[in-house]
Image (tube, rainbow, N blue to C red; front, side, top):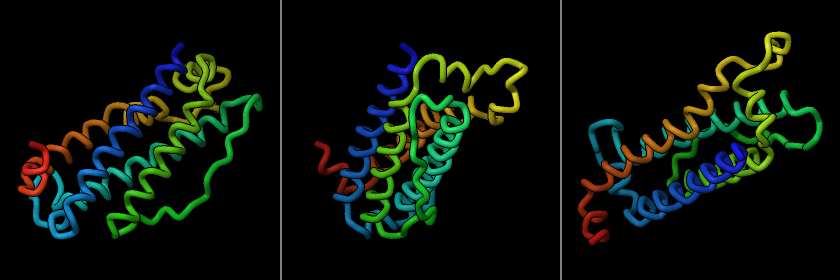
Length: 165
C-alpha cells in the first residue's frame, strides 16, 4: 500500500516536470536566461538547480534500495555523466531521464523495503544510510516546492503569461 503511494508520487513528479519543461522550452532562450531575481538568477538557473537536486536525491535513493534490497529484485544503477547541461533542450532530456530513474526505483518499493529505508532495527543500523528520510523528503516535498518557485517565476514572463490565457 505504501509502495503504491511512492509510485503515484513518482508518476505525478514526471507529469509535473513534463508540464514545467514544456512551458519553459516554449519561451525560448532569451526568456530563460533573462535576469529573474529571486529565488534564482534566471529561469534556466532554477531549472539547473532542480536538475541538480533531483540527480542527488534519485542517486541516493537508488543506492539505498540496492543496499537494503535482499536480492529479490535487481536495480541497475545508471553510471552517467553528472555534469549539469547548459542548453535547455539537454537539460530537459536529462530531467526526463532522471524522472524515469525515479519511477524505476519506486517501482521496486514494497512496504517492507520502505520501512527498512526509514526505520531499520538497531542491529541493522549499519545497513541504513544516514538521511534516507531526508532523501525522501527532498524528492516528494522539496522538489515540488522548487517547481512551484519556477512556476511563479514563469508567471512573470510576458510570453508565458500571454500563452496561459
